[in-house]
Amino acid sequence: MAALATSARLSSALERGFMASLVGESLANYKLADEPLTVAVTPQHIELSGLYYDDQHFWESLGSSSKACRVDIVEAALSEWVARIPGLYWQRSSVRRREIEQSDVENPIGDFVTLRPLAKSRVVSGGVGTIRLPPSESGCRLVTLTTSLNASAGVPALISPEIWDELKLEEGTVIQGRAAWQPMPLTWSRQFPQLAGLARNCLVFRKSDDVSVQKGLKAPVEVHPFAIMEYTSQKLGTQLHDFVYATSQTRQKDFHKNLGTFFEKYRTAQSRDGIYLTGADLVDPMWPATFASPEDMRRGEAAALNVIESRIDDEMQGQDTIEALLELLSSKDRNDLIRLSTGVELPPNRWSEGGSVGDEAIRLVDGAQRAGKIAALLYAVQGEENR
Image (cartoon, rainbow, N blue to C red; front, side, top):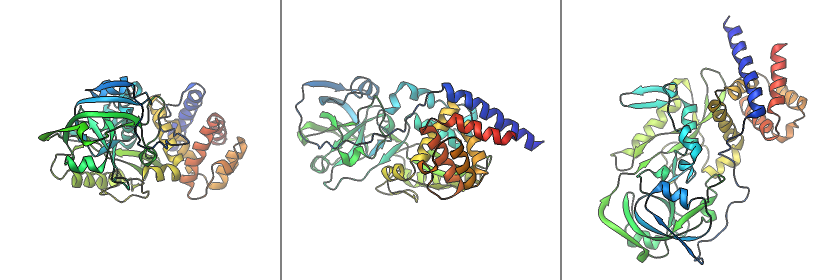
């Protein structure tokens, strides 16, 4: 009876997914620009000007424009943690993704809750998530300025080593001043996915006279370190990938150590047996990670990132098609995947790289999506299950 129920659930999910695939629109938050910016930080002719007094107002008024402009900063806290995709937090579609339902909760602990992996992925895709990057070879630092004391919601800023050292800047410093809003240099731009409607710009301070510090004041900035976790779903027995994040304030005692402890416990909770593919603190790592940077992760595991987005898109439409499809494909062998791919006229050399069946199943689903053949693959898999 249990097997029949599982088969019925999968069949229903596949049927719903087939219909959704005909009308659904991909949210595509992880699509990357083919060519990152190569603009150097050099003075530019600036005619436009703006005022930065509120994170949300800044992104709604200036954040979508790549045109250089002068920005007067009323007052903002500095953090060494930068948003995964600067500006994504304030996109209209992000608000819904950050909403937490009771069904998202995996383990309530007092006033705090731990979310299930896909719920964490959805929240991260809604703009929550920060990373700490090392200085460039020249000593420049990419940081966040924020009026809301939320690094995920703030504005990236580039600070030279001369300004950093002369003003003794550090985590939580509150500043005022004037900067230029201009394209982000290649050193940092390649660390971030590109999202349509958001400029890959940053605030650039030209000289120390452009910045003043509120001495003696250190703000508690909220940060959200995140990672990509590869794990086994206890429910499905399928290899999956999801974002994991945690929330802390940089002024909290032992915040760095406590975050590392959380991530270690989370990867093994619920028998996940997970590993982290990326780190969040590239200066002082909190946990072992397979890839050295987000850029390396996107080169090596682009299919996994795309499938995360597809599963989130599924969930937002009340579907579980991609997970059901991955479950079925993971139960087959590599020859079966090659045969199914060939049957829907998707050349295996477009996606197959070898490795485990779980890895290949993820690549097949990603390849089918990119080729517009998810509906055909659903038909093929469903036809075999019904025989």
